[in-house]
Length: 141
Image (cartoon, rainbow, N blue to C red; front, side, top):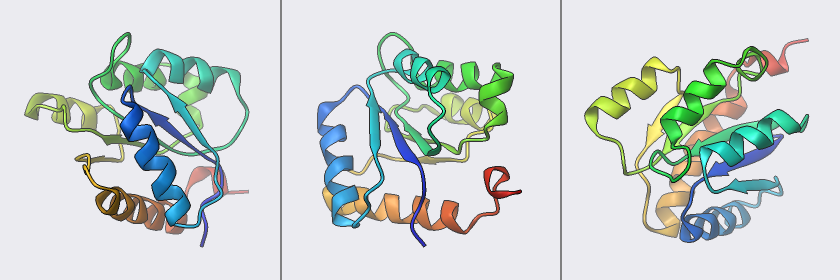
């Protein structure tokens, strides 16, 4: 089953943007990738669009607004929280305390960044398989 909706990638590293774009193409996915360089840009995007978001893949350590603050902002916004968009950290920056805090903010996973295309593809395959099979509020009628 193919995922529906956009992939929101929140990361300040252009190399990561390229890895995700190539990985999506290698997986044969035509989903749009929306890239934002920090949590503030991503939050502004989410507040200004009605486009369905399949998943948020966020780095933790970014300028302006980092991943934890971004996720906390979503949790504190009833409209955004109500959309129940799967939020996954894709980062190498997390210390033990940060990872524990991330889970208290109701993230749905934390994947260490793969530094290779094959590793990125493997991570995306796992994420996509789970969230396309999962019963999710956005799919309930």
